[in-house]
Length: 401
Image (cartoon, rainbow, N blue to C red; front, side, top):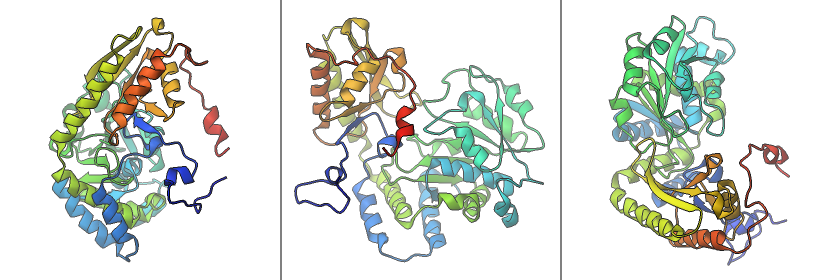
């Protein structure tokens, strides 16, 4: 058993810890380490790590950076988007009442404590999003059905107990039949209800506030490529109330100085990033993979846009029976390869998976193409080639064994 202290001049930290050197074509997934942190953020984290700082002052500095990048009146950094949602909801409940902040989540007497959310937006991103609401001590009020939300569904869900409304932007949500953000905000604002937007995986740092949201929560570690963190931005009074939850339920969600400084540096780097150059490299990877899959029996591939209009594409790979694989079987074989290639497999039961080019190190696109060809053209199929897509929690229950 290797330990963290085991070192060697020719080994990497993954090798020393006994971790697989995976190639990530799944996306900016928390379960895979979130992102490749940009050098600017690493430098800022290293520089501040040994320094004492007054955390409120550091967050004041962060507020200025967040406001500049997002167009919000104020902002702060927290542990992740899930904590940002909880803090924003708790803030809408308590305002700046410090005693009410200390009494959450179980004592909500005298507070507005209901949160309206479209039923098609109650998703799971590794945990159920409604839990982020309930952690604050609020009650979830679903509006509409899983396939359609009408204006009256939201309007009639709002009452004298409503503290806020939550709108989720994610590929996990139902992508049709839901109210648009503009419609949702119009209905809520007519009744003086603030709208909180979960935009964890979104590229556009300004549009959601511009379209009517009062608070927007972003990930600092997905497209921004910062350390694991969340960014809360929007109306100053709501941001202040959310920040004060650090005195209550958010104490368990506190963020370190390293993550604050790293996220600030990632935001600064975002302004200077060569976005067009990154798109060209991603397009080259997609075309390479599509070409590698051509003429393989039972396999199809097409380049598709991101479902929430982020400026990126992915390769959708279709696996048909004549390939003698299922989509789940191909994903499993790639994950078991050397090196392991982890695909975006959340829709394998529909007979396809996706390849995401956003998190590649130099040379990895070519390795992925080689692995795809090797797996799909091998004469012998692995034992689980026709694996059925099943939900299996057994692996989670075995941790840490």
